[in-house]
Image 1 (cartoon, helix red, strand yellow):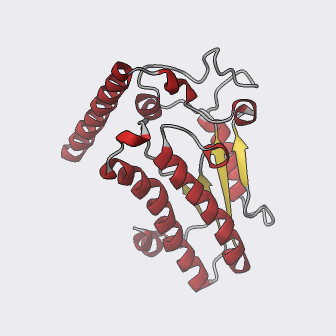
Image 2 (spheres, rainbow, N blue to C red):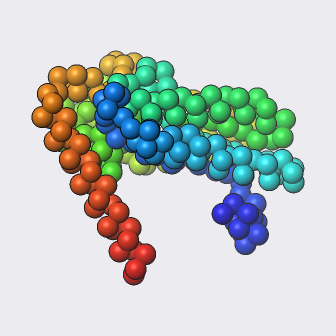
Amino acid sequence: MVERIWQEHGPLDGLVNNAAGNFISRTEDLSPNGFNAIADIVFKGTFFATQAVGKRWIATGHPGAIVSIVVTWIWTGSPFVVPSAMSKAGVDAMTKSLAVEWGRHGIRLNAIAPGVIPTEGASARLRPASQSHDSPSRPNPTGRSGTPHDLGTLAAFLLSQENHWINGQTIALDGGDWLAHGAYYKQYFDWTESEWAEAKARIRASNAKDKSLRNLREVV
């Protein structure tokens, strides 16, 4: 894929690693396939995309900037999303490591750790019983959730060629939420067996719906 971009459009100037896959689960209930489904997307996918772009920049002396989207769980950890927390922590370590290793090639790496930015996919897999992080049990210090515009603005700033000296940083973009409240998903400690079973059914239904839509798009 990356080689095709280079051949058809010329070298990239920037890369945004925004791959994500996640769902809530008690860790003792995870299967190897469930763990790998998250780690393969978030951990391996981010690394291989970064490596594919970075090695071409290094070979040709082309400067570039990489921004990876992580989570505030890299600092706090988070129950019930352990594969994602582990994988995103690995992406954060990659960001800091390659910022040092590749800085001499004119390649900068930074990361953004967003708070809650509501999307349909995230809500279906992380809040399957319709709980919201904006509920009174977790009020954000700024009084609102994030928006795609918030994230896009910061990503554009970090990717800008005018930024020559911001390198190896992970910036929280959550209105101060993690400082005020720490880890997410602690409300699930109170769930019963039936609530976990219902959540699993909702997540499976959402996955089946997404698969059907993908198949429809392929046919169309």
